[in-house]
Amino acid sequence: MRMKMSEAKLISGADLSQKLLSELEVRVKDLAARGIVPKLTVILAGEDPASKSYVRSKAKMCKQLGLASEIIRLDAAVTQGELLTIIHRLNSDDSVHGVLVQLPLPKGISEDIILNSIDPAKDVDGFHPANVGQLSIGAPTFVPCTPKGVMYMLDAINCDLAGKHAVVVGRSNIVGKPVAQLLLAKHATVTICHSRTRDLPSVCKTADVLVAAVGRPKMITAEYVKPGAVVIDVGINRVDGAIVGDVDFDSVKNAAEWLTPVPGGVGKMTVAMLMSNTIESAERKNKA
Picture 1 (cartoon, one colour):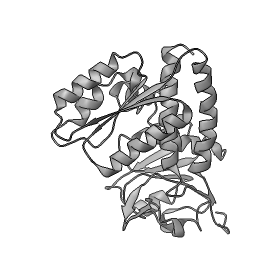
Picture 2 (tube, helix red, strand yellow; picture 1 turned 120 degrees about the vertical axis):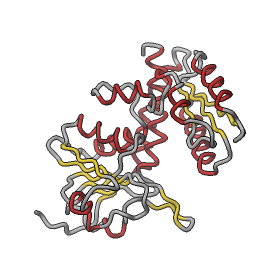
Picture 3 (cartoon, one colour; picture 1 turned 180 degrees about the vertical axis):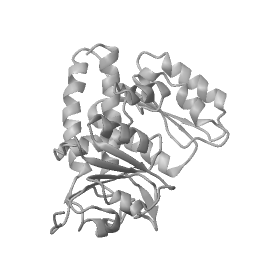
Picture 4 (spheres, one colour; picture 1 turned 90 degrees about the horizontal axis):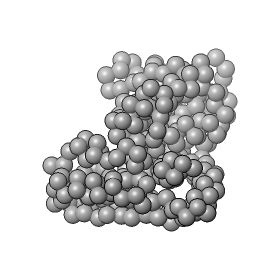
């Protein structure tokens, strides 16, 4: 095993998201030349501060790219039936290319029922079972935004995944499972770890690529990291007013070869990939 002598090189989500946005601007202009403006509609129910912040960032990026955006703000007392009525209306609105329901939803509303009611052709979050199924058979339609961003970052550093061992810590439907599918599609050997994995540090230490998506601040330390590994930190945790990842950056930077920062890493890519999926939806609808 080779020795790790220098600090990790950073994979900057800020820089890569700007590169992606430049690529997307060309596609938006091509659509505009044909009189087509991609439109994203976001439904925000309740007053969760983090959700409101996320929705603002999405609207800001839409404006930056020249996409049309609409935010439907609903009181926390909204009923499931009222929410379904709105989604059905958006499904039938030809001017809307992407429909996103900001999570979490107010108590008493089933996330599964709501997300499953979105037209799969407008499901730019990639959460509908039809899109999940397409991803699982290697023929994805809409890939969830965070996993899609992770893969873009790995591609940006020319990480050849074929034959590599990738370990994903976390098995959520939003990140863990889809990113594992995407890594597998690139011919990596994939291990998914979770709260019941025995001797987690030892398993992680075998990884050429380690993706931390467990939602526990600074859980992944140098003890978990193989020297020279690529470490992707998906975590966004608020601790004493600061944003920290699932990776203990100061510890891991001396073990990994490549490392994503938090903030300024995967989070930046997530919103950019939402724009990408919305544009892709508009292109598909108009056979671009």
